[in-house]
Image (cartoon, rainbow over all chains, first blue to last red; front, side, top):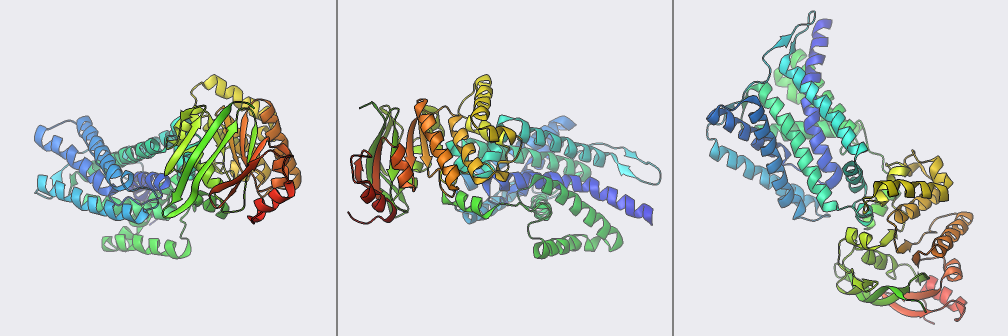
Length: 299
Length: 240
């Protein structure tokens, strides 16, 4: 009984750490752009297909597959930034979101044309498992968690210890103020997008390696998981993205076990709905004074 | 008469179809305090934003010591030596005081000198040193204004644009701010000041302009004109 509960919680945390990564990428983009990128999941999906292409066609090794996944995700992400965000200037948030949906369809279409078989194999990452006491931990889940933790730490250092981090935080808080102190805001937005896509690429690689297969639906799935985790945590907040991802993973693991797998996604949506009603700002709701909001809007 | 540092010629800036500046021409002399007065909505902040490069003018020219800067990206304008203390201060509220200062030096890459300048700001504003590790959003209005001024100074500007630095501050703090403006000017920084507080502004300005509905309608030297009339117009925008 208690063993099941702990095991489920562990599973939830491990799987949730990949949701956290997805949500971090999402929230980074939302934080600096204040606009939603629905194409985030599909660009990651495109990356995983780049990885699988190397695997299936050239029997490439682990590192090459990972590199291709990352590169594919970053390239697709940067493409989305140019088309949906750079070309559509600030103030047209809806236009950006809608066009990111259009690019989503386009990316999915490209993948289904190049890969007509729907389901493709993806090389596994770590074929071992630990059994501490009565518990069972998959090796690839451990790697997933370790990567998520490492990326979180690195991202924190980047944001709070570097010049780029200073610029990124300045732009996300007030683009006009960032501009007149001399920050190249366009470059910062572009770099943030590339960074978010890279983090998404890592998440995509880890998830695909754990599942050992991919389909074009992975894009939809990744956008959903990232979006839900980000909303649970609080949009634009990185600690929120981490907490939201873990929470989502834990909810799914428990509801899948106690209610049955068919209720797993349903439970996640129910919790999301409850959050939207009772705590719309998420776990880490951003407190922004009305005055600074107004001041930021003036320019 | 000293040399012209900033020259604005026939600048027009619009928000969509609404033209906020309808051909503004003015100049700021090197080493002086030039003040721009006018009622709400006259276009004062628009002009500041246009000079700083945040807004692009539809037409006209803006030169700094003869070099054209109109329409250039804000970061190029900062690099040329124009820094802005914006209306409502716009400090970065969830960054520390020291990070705000370092952000102000973003146009520079001389790390050692930047460190020295941060120290100099802390010496000038001891309150900022006390709160150096605190988030800027937790500062009082007056402290935020000092921070906004220091942040702009971190760019080592030749010309400091100050947009309503006394807005919303207690009278004692306002006195402080004006003392600082005079000090900075005495140290060689040219100041271009937008102020609602016309009494105070006329007391420190070498030259002033009056702007109404996007046009400069009057300019002069304080003391040489009927001050009360100017002040009435600065507040109310009524015809003389």
